[in-house]
Length: 331
Ligand SMILES: Nc1ncnc2c1ncn2[C@@H]1O[C@H](COP(=O)(O)OP(=O)(O)O)[C@@H](O)[C@H]1O
Ligand SMILES: Cc1ncc(C[n+]2csc(CCOP(=O)(O)OP(=O)(O)O)c2C)c(N)n1
Ligand SMILES: [Mg+2]
Image (cartoon, rainbow, N blue to C red; front, side):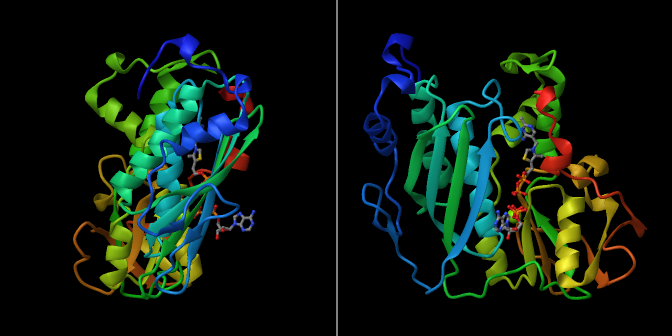
């Protein structure tokens, strides 16, 4: 995002906690729902509708991102986006983020500053009014960003995973498989042996660059979460681990089968089904044309032997499982 001479960019180990915190807070905007922001023992957030939607997601160096591939800004943006998506998926409007950082002492201050910029800009772009209201700072050899997001239902009922009814239309808002394509570009093109190396964007085509952006700096359709709730969504979730896996979770929670139309899943059906991290919104609506921003991809049918069908046939439960899929030896 911004650069300055290395001498003027101290490592965190050369600074005090107070100095690092000041640098972060200088770059943090005040949210529309913030009653008391950072600086005291805890923040106070307005909860106009009397209940608070709360979620947390952690990004760990290794299984979730690599320093060679993600700038501080990217990491801040993505950490915000994946949490905002979980709030949106309940039909709520994000109001506040709490950010716990465990950072190595040799990290540059500019990285943490860019991280704070990424959080601020992701909130401004994806969830206006939402802001970082507090957090924590500690030292660790493994860079870790643990985020808690809060949201407001604005007087509505939450849209859960369990409300899909037989006959509902299954719809999606946002991308399917782009972030996974980006990840395959990273692992396929930007490693030296097993070691991640910096990205050379000039070596990529426009499609690959867009896929990289989808992976490193995703823009889930946060505003469409509350919009879907208003439009009568019966069930909703964000797709973090791949459509096949997450649609199965929604089907199981609703005790139905989801029957997808392969022709509605784009050119690469396998990637659309297996690719995680786009944080598209998967929702069901009463029969008819889904609301603006959503496209129909299937139908809810009575619970059968398989929770998920694509063109009438069962499919492999592809998708991301960190315990199964992360190999610490492969970058
Ligand atoms: N360590 C934990 N303690 C309590 N609940 C957890 C824990 N980890 C996950 N959960 C809950 O399990 C559910 C599924 O988690 P997760 O797969 O992380 O959700 P998502 O994919 O939407 O981020 C969520 O409701 C989450 O709050
Ligand atoms: C360096 C790196 N390796 C692997 C991945 C792949 N990856 C990490 S998290 C994830 C999916 C979602 O992660 P999870 O922790 O299950 O999030 P949640 O479902 O809780 O939202 C994927 C596909 C990645 N993004 N970056
Ligand atoms: Mg989710």
